Length: 239
Ligand SMILES: [Zn+2]
Image (tube, rainbow, N blue to C red; front, side, top):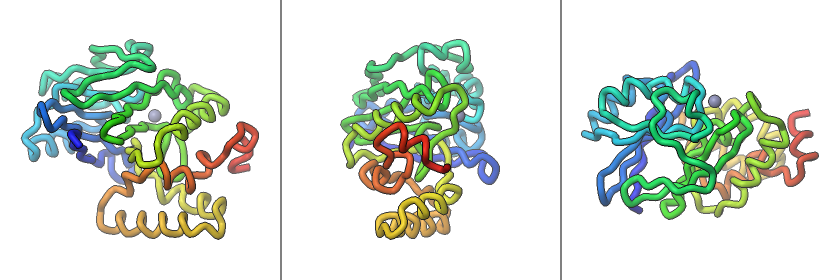
């Protein structure tokens, strides 16, 4: 593995965001994904002695981009996001498009457009490192709300995620596991896997750790929204 990943909880207790610091081990080129809040990220970067070259955004919402400008100014980092969102992402410098590859040193991320939560929402998929940054599209046991897309859009977005290998770890933009736990448990009655999932989640949260990362393989079996195989089934979830 050449990509190191550090989780930074932000807006704790009211929005429960996760930002992530990425470092390419070979070149020490680094980035922050979805900088939600300046102080916790600057603190963690100082602790790690890292000056990020890039800020990578999954989408334009303020709780994922609020620290873009301050980090950009502080570190001289370049802001990278979906080209289509160039007017909506603060400090936008470099545009990427669906299907393209972005190089963070020797680590490579594939860009996957999953417009649904917002139009232009992208995933950052580090294929070789088996790491997927899902922003507000996929959370533990649930998915993001539909601010700018339709149920059909979200269903298609989730099919793209489902097509990725089971051993990929996903890193969501918020800690929502326990909000989704009751419903996921109801949906997956008699499933040992969901019982184990929630046991692990509770244990980690009690220790002050993020629930994730969880593998897509486990998530595909426990997240009701990923379990739906047809748009009809998807639309019926939660009815
Ligand atoms: Zn959002």
